[in-house]
Image (cartoon, rainbow, N blue to C red; front, side):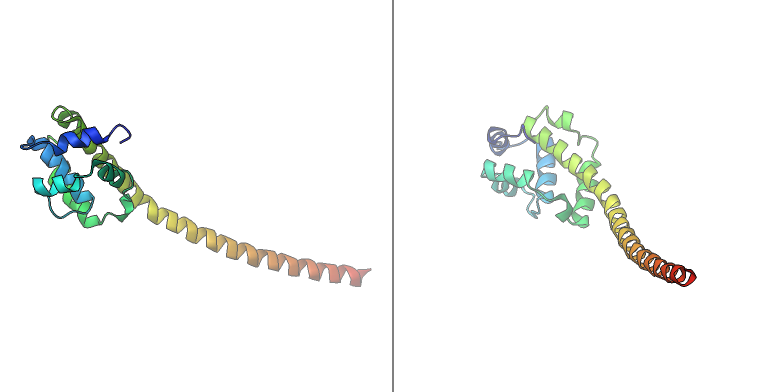
Amino acid sequence: MDNLDKASVGEIKGYANPPPLVVTTMEAVVIMLGSKDTSWDGIKKQIMDPGKFIVGIKSLDVTAIPEKTWKTVREKYFKLPDFKPELIATKSVAAGKLCEWALALSKYQLINKDIIPKREKAAEMDKILKENTAILNATLAAVKEVKDKVALLEA
């Protein structure tokens, strides 16, 4: 996404009749950004300010995208045989980059979704370990105290 600039987004915005692959890509992107309006006019409104659009893309919190939205874009767009960055880039370099971005975020979300429960379980196990370590240390201190008293009695 570092190579996506205002001029590239302006190229997309400038299409009166965009190629179908560009439309498909932009529909998926604006859905991921939370827009309900996937008409070409709605898309053009989303990218009216290319700088703001790029900031929105770069700062998108992938974990904040609802699962329902992921399901929609994966089933309706990502499964299309032509939804490939290299193919879309032949129609628009910027749309190709946005396609690549969307697919990468999707992969990240799937991996992250799998990792989150594992992180939560690890945190839970760490908490249990700390609690049990504290109990063990208290027990060892009590045993030492008893041993010290027995040693005094034997002396």
